[in-house]
Length: 503
Image (cartoon, rainbow, N blue to C red; front, side, top):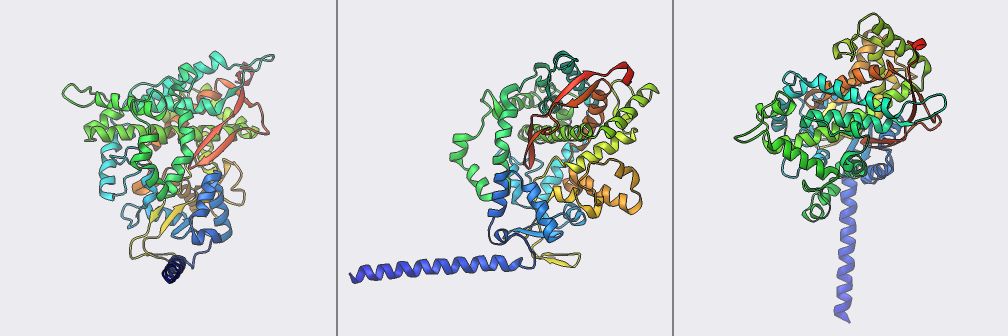
């Protein structure tokens, strides 16, 4: 009995010791950032971020927190969130002492090699960017614009073939789905030398889109929670769940295609072409790196640009005044011979109202809303008089940044392209510096930005000069969920040929 009593006493002491040690640890973690305010749950645990991630509204939750607590808010024991444009640019500047946090580990698609997003070592990241910059810029990819033109023609052909409505017939088109077919064909053409044929077949080839939509919530959990990423990257989980290049559908099939296409560009009988992949090879990208980057192009580039196409067009469609003004600019330019058919990228840049519609659309609905967390240097940093302790993670709230009334005015929640034509001087400069963050800045700026803008510069012109669009259900125009990248569907539109009297 005495031995049992001693055993129970020791167990009780051990439990108390663990509780005390845990409490001390929680108190220490709380105190190091106690001068930053935020939701109570977030000050003591990562459950606040976990809950918002599960609900698919972390973008709006971080925006609400910053509106309540100011430009810095605490949302985790070691995690701050900000919408301060100056700080966001400072953290990503070429000579910044900030580094990428372990948020980026979740973006490692190939467990054996980092890609441009997952690489956290600054020297290796800089070297990787240098190998890829020429390919993305178009300097060594002369067929880039023609490739996008061809895919837009596929888009037009599909609409004319299957989705033209008449006075007596409705052939509803899911523009949310169509936009993703378009960007998937553009990116697979750019990455692999030929489109997968989403537009030609009007279907989800290899069930990739279906697969990636189900994967996005998991990916956001992995990036936001390193412990979950470690679990998902374990040998057991990968053996049970990870896609493989032998799969016939989904991400695995894309991996298989990437491996096959890339393999043909290496070795003694390699194929040499003047395209993006050819540029990567010439600048020293290894075969494994090229496979990984090809997957990243499709996974990140196609979804984000599809979101931009959908949301810009949705805001144009739901504002008759804006639709009418943009159509007038397009048709006037067409009649005066200032734009070709298809429109050239350089011509689209000379259409001022088109450009501000695109800019305002990217602002009102930024297509990428991941936390993209950076880490302060070990000694900490003082920014605008506020000391941030060393090794503190600071995340980006895209929604708060681009809906900030201090930058964009009291009507920041409204889609109003004219704000870009009215603003001048320091006000315009602040707005420009903010919206540039949609594609990142400094050493972390998106290399695919020029490709995305070329798609946006062309697609609205080519659709609006041919067709008349209207929403089928304006009270519920689209279903959308945010997982860092938006998952969207059900944007049904009625499409008719543009009448001669409207031209």
